[in-house]
Image: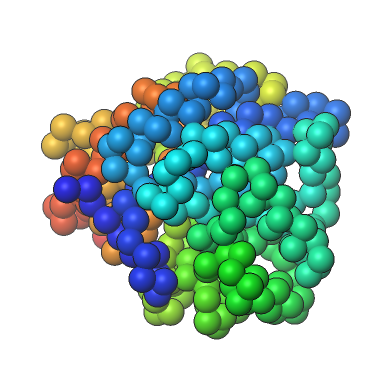
Length: 322
């Protein structure tokens, strides 16, 4: 049986691991240059999504801006004929041109802009409703955010979306949305090395799900990087320095955690997901993917479930958190 979790107070139950669909959107054009996750093969992406379905994954997280609509289009194609078996989460609020693939500065958060974005996402996803609609601008002005929440409540009333949330690491913003009757989740960055405990605590207190982006620290927790690793300029991680700085420190800490994360047969990536599940009963990690092989490894974490209390104790001790 696949490990499951509830999406907050919605009553919806999903696999405890979802798939994050940022990478399969490929690249956007930012200031005249490609920026993203490098080349992607849409056919491979579709096979990967369908593989996840076969292994019991029931939730998929995307955004309209991922590849300027490409990720949503691919997801909609992959889920054709199986819409009633899955939960689709997408996001709005970024500015982009679907035809040219360009991304722009600024926020699209007026009532009219949100409605247009919702209609466009429904078209690309080939569906007539969105299960979880999330605000994508994590630092949006707090005083104006109530109007965004009110618009989302209207979209629920109209049947265009079922529930909503905010992709933000900020506890004050999470609290504001938590006060909305149909808010059921906050998406926050969380992995062994990063995450706002305050934001997580607000989710726990309000009965919201904590959907966890970057559960593998954008690939670093898979163990595939070394101090010599270099990424192409197009890759959004191009400026990572594996010899000095934050990534170098995380690589070193990962080495100290390797044995405990893999002590019961898991891969590093599977151990990292197990840590998130053990950290809180409301967490739902959404690792990214570009290939069938990556999906198979990520979904394999469901067989193991949360790390044990002893593994968590050893990790906390190693990281100096005990």
